[in-house]
Length: 253
Image (cartoon, rainbow, N blue to C red; front, side):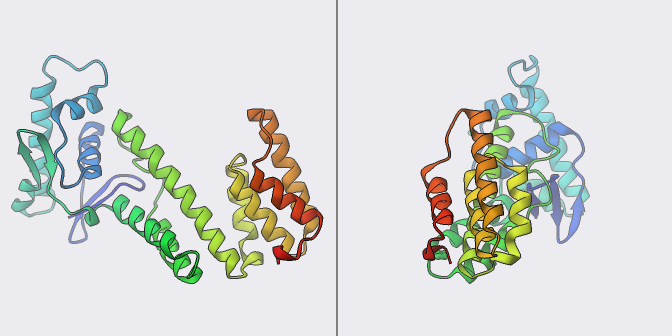
């Protein structure tokens, strides 16, 4: 069985989709998947489904949702044995799947592997990061509930995704692909104008493409945004890149 969390929730078995209806069932699948192979306490699942106002019957309702999920897996995939994928123990409920069956774990593994080689093997880093980012189909956990576990997972995964983009463009710039990445970096910088590393990368790509005036203008626009939005000056790294562009430092090429 495969579970996809990097976008709308998807469950499949041998390529056959298994529909999981209802926000509460999708939330249960998401939380169990984020803890694949480890039990999740009943109290945590109850908090996820009902936040701070669980009904008196919350534990019985949770048990009913788990029973329904087991039936869905068995019937939807046409394999009765999948009923046992959701296991019960004194510690709570667990999804008996390897982490590699969940796309979020595969994504983070690929990013971590890329981080170990990006300094010495930028082409390999590009390959790994492109594969990792290609797993995304939309915002993570898109159609699950707004419980604490899902919210925290969304925030963490989104942070890793943005870091992966930063590593990807660092590697592509090392490979001399400055002209090819300008348009993509402009889009990312427009979407995340306060993320300073995207700005630094865009400045570098513009300068190496012979567009010094645009590189300087990018810095000044970001500096104004940081001041207006956060009351901050650009970080040291971004200021240094600006000064290198100003004096046309040979190290930039």
